[in-house]
Amino acid sequence: MKRLIGFLGIILLAGPLLGLMGVAALMNPAEISCGWGSLAVGRIPDSLTAHTRDGGSISLNRQQLTHAATILAVGGQLPGVGRQGALIALMAALTESTLRMLTNPTAHPESASYPNDGVGSDHDSLGLFQMRSASGWGTVADLMDPEYQARAFFGGPSGPNAGSPRGLLDVDGWQFIDPGEAAQAVEVSAYPDRYQNYQPVAEAIITALTQPTSTKPSAAGVTVQETSRIVFPLPAGTYTGTDSFGWRTDPVTGAQAFHAGSDLAAPAGTPILAVADGIVGFAGQRGSYGGLIVIEHTVAGGPVASYYAHMYDDGILVAVGERVAAGQHIGDVGSAGKSTGPHLHVEIHPGGEREPAVNAMEWLAEHGAAGLAGAEAGSTGCRPGKAA
Picture 1 (tube, one colour):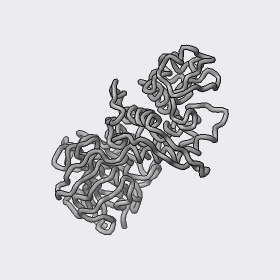
Picture 2 (cartoon, helix red, strand yellow):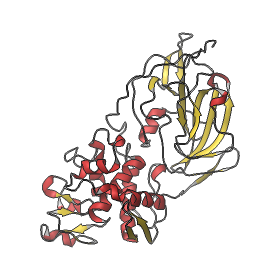
Picture 3 (cartoon, one colour):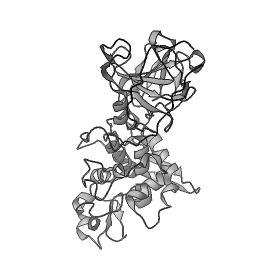
């Protein structure tokens, strides 16, 4: 009989694991390159037409799309934001200003002296996200700066307002609520239901602006396109962390040994998801890994390999050379190889399969993996399997 490991309750990560990355001070409006692959912005088109949820049509010009690119560029350099956070920010800016830097000469006459795309008149609100100086978002000069407004919207420990008013990263569990509700949690609008209407438009903007900007050949010579997003490898609420990356006392020999992956206990048969777009470089049984899938990716212009271990033969659902998408069901949790119970052993190798692994959980958090949740590490890890 296969022994199932019961899973514990999941607790949300309290915040990003790393501090704010530096944001480029000047960007060419024709081409903006972000820090993380999932939000890498390519050439900005002259226009884009998309449809809102209620069927309306909206046409955005190059200036509006440049503001959208600024939001993506800022979000791409903030650990914990990811594609979902960028989507929410775009929904908010579309709803509040149609992605325009709006002055408010009635409330703030000096605002008209800054570069702008038109005039607004909502109380004393300014800019892309219609932020109010009186509410503590910043000075008029701050709020007439698109990059500042994006950083203020995302917030977080290194945000310009230090959590008051709170930005998206200051909202507990924002990743797991409706994107429109998350936007409302930051904007605190009198019309909270407006944001959902712009979600399809925000999706279209991300698709248009984050076309693959870099490709790398895989080990098999096949081109690996830049990933479109990063995803956690197990569905939220299905797992608990049982052994972490780094030096540990080997549970079998008692000697110090290095554990190159992160172990996530989950019931046998739990779907395993590809962490990013890529190409399968290996799929089969490999020593203590048991059933192993290795996927090659291009992230932020560089090669990355992800490992998924301990599947049974019938739990491997992809083949070598197959292209997979981020979040695709590639296999099922098993307990093959050096294992005493069903779990996923996941490794991340920046630089490719032959390069050293890094802490997978930290890497996923840094890259804003969709569906990321945290769990306390326990004592169960990759151990010699027992006879069934």
